[in-house]
Structures are given as C-alpha cells and as structure tokens.
Length: 333
Image 1 (cartoon, rainbow, N blue to C red):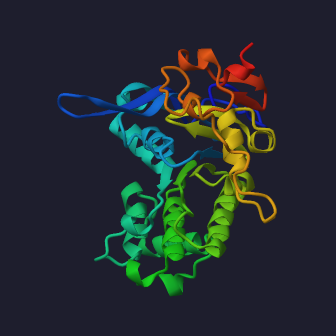
Image 2 (image 1 turned 180 degrees about the horizontal axis):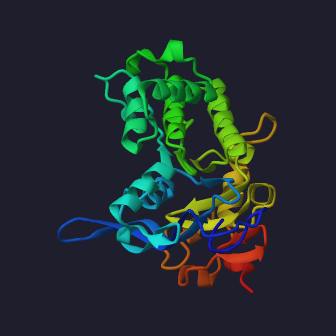
C-alpha cells in the first residue's frame, strides 16, 4: 500500500495513484514567514489490482485531506511527484486527465456543498453521465441512474426531482456515492464521508462502500479520524501525524499491535464502554518535552518515549514485517 509493501495481499502491476516524496508547504506573513508543512515527504501507492480499501487515519490537522487533494491533482505539490498509472499528472494530456477524473472519483465530507441549490439533484447525476459520455440516450441514462441509486440504498421515486435541501444529510451523501458510481471508477477517494451523519446512516454509507469494493471491484481510500470505522471497513491503513505517515500496514496488525507511540496514543484514546476505566488514562505525554520544538521527528514533543536523536533526525518508515512499517527510532536497526 505504500512504497514499502505492507499489505495483506500482494498488489500487481503499477499503482493507479502514487505519491512519491510529496510535500506541500504553505507560507504566510510578510516580514516574519510562518511555514506550515501540510504534507511532509509522503510516499503512498494505491493499487486497483487487487482492489482494497485503504484507510488514511489521524487526528484533525494531520494532513489527511491535503494528501487526498494532492493525489487527485486538486493541489500542486511543493516537492515530489504525483503519478496516475505511472505517469506524472503534470505531464498528462487532456485525454489522460479526463480519464483520471473518471477513474478517480471523490466523495467529500460535506455533501451539501457539492450541490447547486438552484438545481434538482438529478442534475448532479445527469452531468456525470454527460461529461464522460457514458449514456447514449435519455432512456439509458435513466436506467443507469436508477441502478446506481438502488445500489446505495436510495429509491429513485423518492429521490429524483427534489432539491438538495429536501433531502437529509445521509441521502445527499449516498447520492454522492451514486454519482461517483455512475462514472465507473476504479478508485473512490472518500474524505470523511460519514462524519456529518448519524450512527445509523454511517453504517449504511460504509456498507455501501464495502459493497462497491467487494462486488464491483472498486478500490477505496477512506480518509478518517475514526479508528473504529477504519478497523471495520479497511484492509490496509496509513496513520498520519503532522503531515507524515508514521505507521502503515494491514489494519488488523496496526490496530491490534501498534508500534509507533502516536498510534498507541490514538488507540488508547478511544472511549471504552466500561465506566470503571478512565478515558485516555494511558495517553499521557512527556511533560518535560512539551515546550520543545523538533527538527527531527514531529511527534517528539508529545512522545512519552522520546530519545535524543528524535530531536535532530527525522526517522524513516522502516519495514517491521510484510504487514507493518513504522517511522520510529525504537525500531531502527
């Protein structure tokens, strides 16, 4: 799943999307420059053979959304390469860009912002078919739209003809999944697709993504701050902190046996149903390090196991076995 092979299933061919040593740096200020590294030397490869669900997880501000926008070509990297089927997206022809936009479909966090409130929701679906020339007649378009809606648990008669504000948040989000499906994608980039819906609809939307993956062979990148849903849905996982991937591997291995101190803190902070156990009782950080800044590991000021070299040298992602890798000097041979 990354440049390092840490997947339960061995991928074949070239990745459908890959970032190689990609960074995205923002600067602000006139006299005193404030530098923000939203992505910091990230390498990640997503394959569609076999198609798997890969979770990219981390707390808010860890760089997950920036990474997804870089991978889809909606942000230009400050450094590094973004490749679609082995070709730098900056050097692709117009036809290749159109193919990429069809094969790599986004589902965003806020379903309402994706709609024009002056158009009925049918417009979103019809435009997807029209733009990529996927229907040769109105009858064929109507059939394809109906099938896509039913695949995501929506009834065409109760959905079509309505304006966005007449649908619930869950219906609008499932409609976005249907729109992506109409494009016959090879990869869906789902950025926090269930964070704005209630628990019952969350399960429905995630089940739809799993069904598209298993029955239609569509790879999925599931971006989330919620390790619980990542564990339920994904096969592989990459954990991000401060713009870098600090741990990756199969979701079962990483969640059950986390190696990086940040991953351990994330998992320990998950609320437990047992009220006798204190929430986050094992997530204490190093008080002596909190005020320091680090030119090496970005997690050093918060790490309870920080070492001297962590402050000066950035650790590389080291393969621990074929199912797991971690960027931590605790495992540096």
